[in-house]
Image 1 (cartoon, chains in turn orange, green, brown, yellow):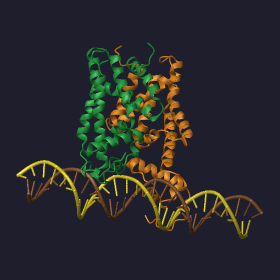
Image 2 (cartoon, chains in turn brown, green, purple, blue):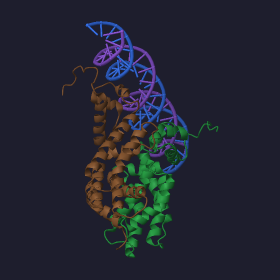
Image 3 (spheres, each protein chain N blue to C red):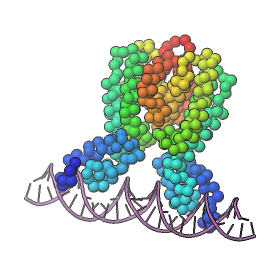
Image 4 (cartoon, rainbow over the protein chains, first blue to last red):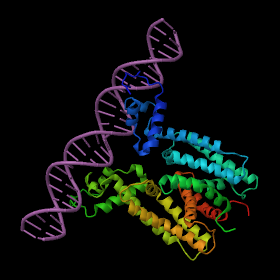
Length: 199
Length: 199
DNA sequence: CAGCATTGTTGGCGACGTCTACATTGGGAG
DNA sequence: CTCCCAATGTAGACGTCGCCAACAATGCTG
C-alpha cells in the first residue's frame, strides 16, 4: 500500500472519509477508542483538518448518530409489513431492531448518549421521531383494528419500545448473547401482547 | 475555606475520599467529566497519589460501579415486600429501581458500561447476581403462587427486567421526564402482567 | 529503636482536543 | 481568461489528561 504519493492537498471529500473511518473505528474498537488525531492519520490528513468539517469531536459524534438514525429508520421501515396481524408484525419489527442493535452496538450507544445538545438537536429530534414512527404506526394500526387495548397510543408505544430497548441493552451489556436475544425476542413480543398472567 | 494548612502528608483514608469525590463529580457532571488529576486536586493530594489506590482510571470506575451495585441491591431489597400480591409487589420494586436510575443515572450507566473487564469481574458478577436476585425472587414467588404463567423463571425475569431497564433508559436519555416515568411505571407493570390484548 | 513496606510527591512522557496563523487550492465575478 | 477570495488543509502551540519512575515522608513491626 504505497499511499505516500504526494496527496493532492485537497482531499476531495474529507468529511465523508472522516465519517466512514469513524464508523469503522466505532464498529471495531468502540467509541472510547475514537480519536480525531488518529482518524486524521488514517485518512492521511493533518491533525487539524477534521476541525474544518466538525467544529468539535461532539459534532462528529452527532453526525454519526444522525446517520445511524437514518439507517435504523430505514431498516425498521423495510422490516415492517402493514398487512400482517399484530403479533408477527411486531415480532418482525423487533427482530430488525435487535439486529441493528447487535450489529451496531457502539453506534446505538452513541445515538442514545447525547443527553441534550442544544445544537443540531432539531435534526436529531426529527430523526428520532421518524425512527419511533415505525413502532408507533404498528401500535396505532393494531389499535384501529382492535387487536390491542385502547388507551394513549403514545404510551403503549413507549411501553413496547421499552421492552425492546431493554433486551437490546442487555445484549449490548453482555448478559445476553446475540443468539439468545434473537431466540427470545418472539417470546418477548408474545408475552408483551398476552401478559404474564395465566390465561 | 482555608485548607492550605500543611496537610499531614498521609491523608488518612485517601481511597474513601477519592471514591466520595468521584461520586460527587459523577452525580454533578457525568462520567465524562471525571479526571483523576482533577479529583486529586479536589481532595488536596498530588496528581499521582490516586495511583497508589487505583492502578487505573478503570479500576476506580469499577470500584464505583461495585459500590453502586451494593446500594442498588440494598434499595431493591428494602422496597420488596414478599407478602404483597404480584402486581403491587412488582410495582414497588419497579418504582425503587426507577428512583435509583433517576437519582444516579451516571452511576447506573457506569455499572452497565463495563462490557467484560477480566479483572475484578467476579466481585462484579456476584454483585449483579445479588441485584437481579430481588426481581428473580419476586418472579419465582409469583410463579409458585400461580399468579403468573409457568415457564423458565429466568426468562420471565429477563423479560420483566427488560421493561424496567427500557423505561430507565428512556428517562436517562431524556425522552421521559422523571415524573412521567414514575407516573407511568404502574401502568407499565400492569400491562406487563395483563398484556396489551383486549380482554 | 531500626528497618522496611506503605503512602504521597515531583517531574516527565506521549497523546489528546482545540486554537491561531499560515499555505494551497479551485471556482466564480469582472 | 484572469484575478481574487472563500474554502480547505497544514504547522505549531497550549493546556489537560493518564500513566510511569525516582524520590521522600511516614508509621508499623520485629
